[in-house]
Structures are given as C-alpha cells and as structure tokens.
Image (cartoon, rainbow, N blue to C red; front, side):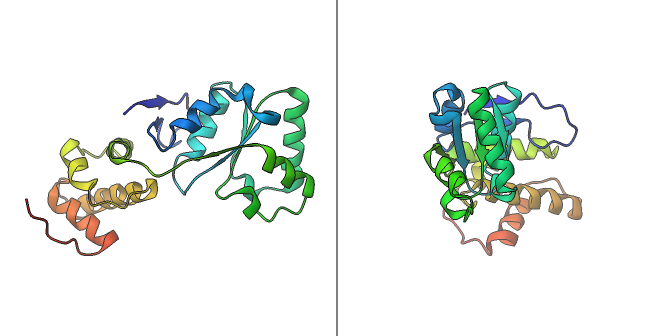
Length: 204
C-alpha cells in the first residue's frame, strides 16, 4: 500500500501521510489532473475521518489549487465568491464537504447549480490492505508500538471504516496507559470489546 507524504509543518497537525488505496485512488488521480476539471471545480465528499481534510491540505500545499474545507458549514455567499474567483483566476478549487451538495439545502440557486455541475469525487470504504496501513499510521502518530501482528488481528474484526480504525487505535492507546501494559492481544481484545461489544470466539 502506498502513501503520500504531506509537506505539513504545524506541530500537532495530525497524520503526515495519506494512505492510498482503492477507497481514494481515483480521488487523488483526479486531484493530480485538476486543470481538466469542469469549471475548474471539484466537490470532494466522504465519510467522517476518511482523510478529506488531509487531501485538501495536500492539494493546496502541492500547488495544485485552492481548497475550501468543511464547505457545507461556511457562509454560502463566501463560498460563491470563492467559486467566482476560481473562474476568474483559472486556479482549480476543491470544495470539501461531508455530504452531497444537494443535501446542504443551499439557499443560493446559482451556488447550488454550480456545485452540481462540478466534478464529483467521493472517498469510499477501505479494503483490508488499506485498513492495515491505517492502523499503522494511527499507531505511529500516537507513538504506539503496533506491528503487523496487531493489524492481522484487528483488521478482520474492526469496523471497516476510517473512523473505526481511529477509534480502536485510540482505545488501545488509552487502555495500554491505564493498565500500564504493553499493547498486546489482551489490550487489542479489550479495545474491540469496548467499542464493538463482546467478540465471538473464533476457531484457529
């Protein structure tokens, strides 16, 4: 599984790499060809914690264009001005939201029509390889020693979402500190049970 390093300098900015997999490969490829976007604009959607903000930061800091994160939460007039500025300058604009533009209940008809005509990009669900890489990245971010054996145990049992990985790694970190134990199988099981409930025994 490949990763994209981000040119981020702010302390505590979060993960410094984008894990690349089937869930986001098409999005990243489209962002690398932003000059071909209709109206120089694309709308990026995806589930919570799926890396939308990381991609927006990479898009801006790589010089590909400008990005508006959490666009469904900002003033519509300001967003419309950003769209107009992108048209005037010819600089691509990536609009990042948590739901489809039609679900934003946009009051400005012109803004609604323009976002509807933009290229629509969406981050999907991670596959097993991407889940394992996400476990590694979140563990590394926390300074948590989780090796391939941890990922092999967690991936078949974990909630198959970006947020699911983040929650389990966070629980492993907290339980390890609370119990003053290394994050081994007992901690992994306890974290899964805390989040998902008792785990069914599996035959080996």
